[in-house]
Amino acid sequence: MKWSVPLWLTTFCLASRTQHALPAHPAFTVPTNNSTFPTDYWIIEDKEVYKRWRSIVQRKVQTSGDKVINFDIIGQVGSGAVIIFAWNSTDKTATIIREYNPGPHEMLWGLAAGMIEDKHGDDPKVAAECELEEECHLRGGRWYSLSERPLAMDKYVTTKIHPYLVVDPEQVCEESVRPLDEEEDIEIVSGLTIEEILGMIQRAEMNIVGAWASLVAINKLHDLGEL
Image (tube, rainbow, N blue to C red; front, side, top):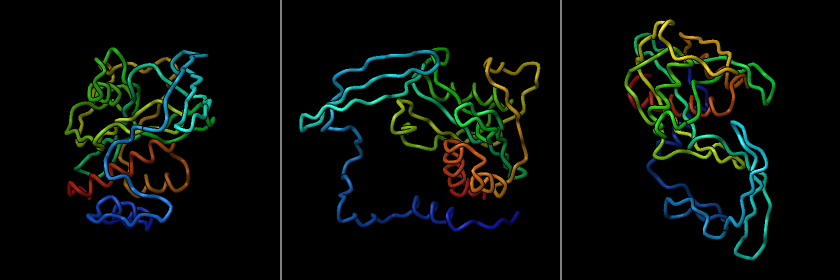
């Protein structure tokens, strides 16, 4: 199967594969260690003002210059989240979902995803397997973690995401599939090509977390020789 690669995706792939350090911007020095822990900021108070599946926390932070800053932070139930890109190596297509996104009030494309809860034993892989079965009716396959550690979802959100690629999961019969959460109404769509998914991203028809995870998965598929 031949498909054209947009320039922006080529740039993304090359940047992620380069073996050379990028030159530092004159106003910014790239840290030499891999720690992202802030050494000049201290949380001095977290006050939870609302809690359901997600929570609102008023966070008070002090800087090294003794400045105190107040932030509104979005928290969640559980210990993070997972997102899964499902790939069929036979026909070179993906299975994704389309669902109502209540925040932007839009019907958007996305990937199977969900929170890591107590019922998963706080294990990201177990949570990912459950979400894939619940939302895409798929099970098994070859699994690949797409990041060395969970990534922060947003500047003002505590959730950190574990992204996965799964290759050749098997269809689960509808009678034995795990039930969806009460508020979920999901359309499962299989047989989508990389070109079609990139088109969704370019047309802003996919939520940003799903778009990001799709791009990272596509890069991994290149590494695996799938594309």
